[in-house]
Length: 117
Image (cartoon, rainbow, N blue to C red; front, side, top):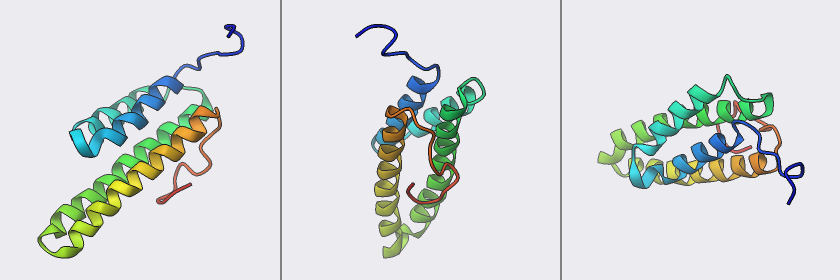
């Protein structure tokens, strides 16, 4: 492919890396923290459509943190384990859908939503 047909948008590659870090986060732990730091650092320098992905990623981290906190807190009773399972599924779905929009070079349709776009 020629260089003109496959232009690399600054920030888009980093946004994709953040999605990947989030997906592997439930297994390796600290990658989610690395991902949110990358999102905060790169958000200002990215094009507007990529900034919507960073906003979505930052919200995904903090909302996921709430699910993780309450799931861990309530894991002493059965409901906490269901919250933790929901958190993993929720995180994967959000990241995969976000990667789909990023790959298509589209703005994220609902960067401030709590569930799925």
